[in-house]
Image (tube, rainbow, N blue to C red; front, side):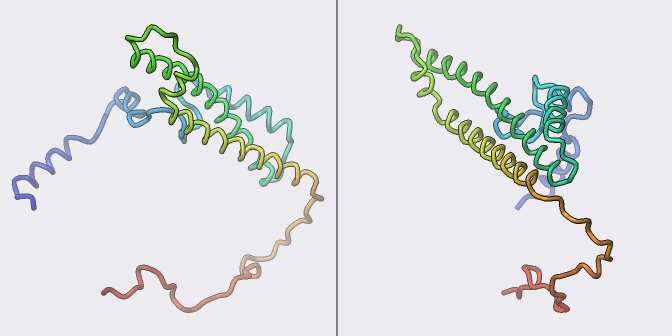
Length: 187
């Protein structure tokens, strides 16, 4: 257990170390934990341009001309996965360059030329991870495309009635409180 003096020092340090405060410091530190863009959550990374993504999105939405929310969501899924696939292609090119350099550094005393197989063997686990992401993006892309084609062939749905939400409730009403971790007896 910490002494009173250690606890006071910890509180003082916690108040002083709150991260970057200037906009320049925040800009520098925002990618501190990022090692590669394979699992990127953000739509725009490093050398990508928001205008390119907007153009791609406009092309897809113009081509598929969907007005219903489900169709728009499917077109958005197509755009998202196409954008990620393009990113993965750029990442793959960079990974080949890095794998080549890693092989050359490890085998500097050998005068043999580095082949693609050598470069792949130098960092095969990274290429395998990348391929899993590519497969996932392609699977999601084709699933959304198939669903979009299915929705396009379906006859239009009739207008929903304007009934109140109380009339639309179809699930069973339960007057008993829910049973969950908060209501479990403590041993």
